[in-house]
Length: 466
Image (cartoon, one colour):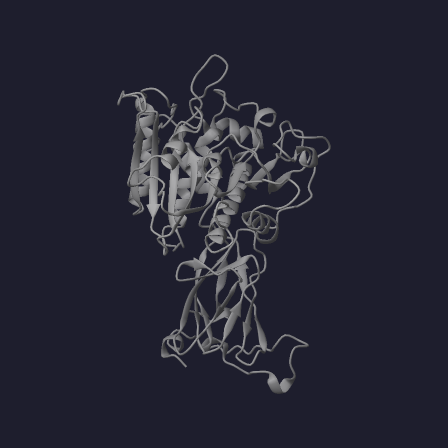
């Protein structure tokens, strides 16, 4: 028995019986659990699992395994374990981490002994502020969209339209770049000038890179940080929903995942010129520079965040839930599942986060997707493969990447779309309060983060052109 585990043991001794019906009494091990398993350096009976937060695990004893339920996530060496099973091999103590979701209600684990017998490890849980949460998102949104004389209290990073010389966009991009750099990411400002005037770049992206274990592949997440330019019938200044919401989610993802390890080189990106035709993401994907998309590596997958928070579980004023869209692709054949990332999409939403699969409204939503709208027009949780475009995931889907696009209400379901009314205050009003908005954004952020972590470790998520 390792002294390192014993040294953290508490006095209490917990005896665990095997699960009923599996083994006879002669096979039942009687153990001092604290000599096998510690969580946060305490015996399981003495620790409280806080939802959505990290917890340390020490597992000792050659051949002992620990199994977690689907919505309790285990990590070893900074990487998620897909099947939720960790095992001690040899004399070394296995160090791991445990992470529940904000929606986990039962974090009980199963300890599997070397002889195959099992013991239930019952854990006490309490609600806590998760590593990615709506409160942090709202605070950052409020700082970015508010204008005041004290720059320590409000940033006023508004009017971020692109396509012409605009110092406001430049100022915002510098701020976002500083966020990634402050977390330790290798971060670049990417300018592409197609018309020869350096004061008016066609695109100005912020790209943060994280090196992966393999030098043969690349993957990423992104959101566009530009807002709809002003015009007679459209245009906005905060662009709170489209797409400061997605921009802030990327800042929070970068913070939450800074210490994790990924299989492939990974980019966290903020695109420009999405509103002018995906120019920013296209410039990154199709130009040759040191921090552009590598042309000699397999592009596995990309996850896109655009217009989020006005979505389930928030409700409209008439009582109907707002629609929630998450579409995977490419959807080459509408009759069959084309890509493995669709399995991850459904697993995250319905098995891990426990969203309602068949929730519908009496009627239909105001705008549809490309191939399956007749099947899903009244479905609240609209989660499936589809060809839907209109955002930066199309850039990477066209290069063979498996993609996921997250989107809430749009067009007829959100009247402030592409208008001066697209403000944070209006978002709060639309969903019935700040707390409701925070709940809605927190759900989609957890969905996207978990999709990324699972896709990273799923070998079948490959470029479809391979």
